[in-house]
Length: 260
Image 1 (cartoon, rainbow, N blue to C red):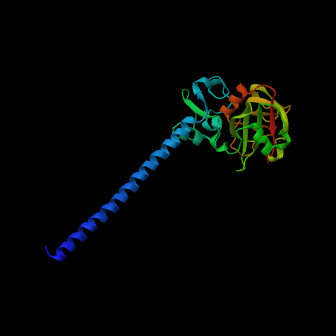
Image 2: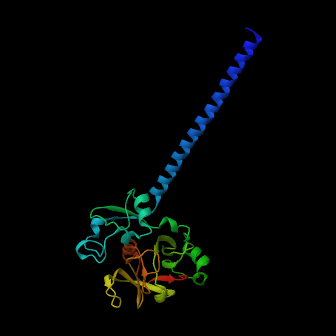
Image 3: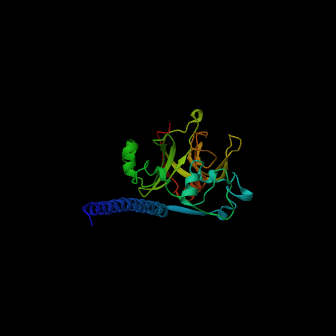
């Protein structure tokens, strides 16, 4: 074989080697991308599985203010979960795509509800003392181990947090009083009132699962998104308010502050 033929053959083999290297790199990058996507999905699934929740079977809502013959409000996902929270809770946590906040729930459905709405984990400290020291220093020496707090978040929305035994137990977005009927700030004692209260002043508007804050304003469920909508009261998503009514001890301290 001539020198030129050998040289040509070597160039050809070297070219094939370079092509294989490039091909190998492409395959490796593709595999790494696939592995990365799988890991991302697993991490997302793990987070979804591990969120603390309470589970509601809608058939158990029969006879409550939310469903069927004795209902006070329309049993929509928005009324039960909040209009700005429905999509995430139903589609991401319950894997039910296509659910709209205006859709009515069915009479036999299981819904997992996050105790702490994920967006609010960065708004409220895990520990009550830490949160009070940072956001309400005037109450940092409080010795109570249970407390409900309603305040304004960094994104401009209002939210409620319930601390039980000094630990964050529940958090959700809420709606406070309109500018002409502002929710009054301060520290109060919260007590369960009526499951089926109606307003005596505002056209008998429903106030399901009402909890008395002070003699003329309440924590209760009623329609809203996160905008200020009420007359002094604090409106809470239906399933969250039902949980609070059934689980928060009487005379629990509630702090309303930095609302507007």
